[in-house]
Length: 200
Image (cartoon, rainbow, N blue to C red; front, side, top):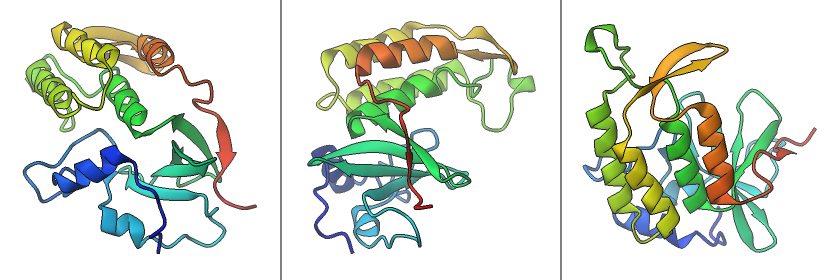
């Protein structure tokens, strides 16, 4: 039991508002971030050889763990890959992790311009804009003005072709643009720093 965990205020508020309850109409959808409730987090039992300084609060569809990594009285956000003993530092805090997740989502291959050619996981520009408006409204008190302004700017963009080594697709930002904005807005020099989340 993790009763002593000092939960981030934003997480406690999200839990109180029902945003973490997948059965709730108010559930907060973010790409590849399926939330755990506060009770689930508190009752989490570490797996064998898993370091005890991490606490999972969400998972991806592949079983990777979004975790808080306790360091010097703060909770960094990290991503622990299910098929690797190494994880990476993702953001300085949960607010930063959510903002970075949004930037990466709008630079991904999850969007279509022709419904006849769309994959089941893809959405059109109008649905994407609805997400951006919703996220801006929900995180108005948690995001700083620069982040909120960036969401406003993203809402104004049109889908464009992104060329990568894996092929082309439509998105609001290229992966390079998303990485550049992450560096600019988060200003945290430990992003993508690797660490062992499994004791070897």
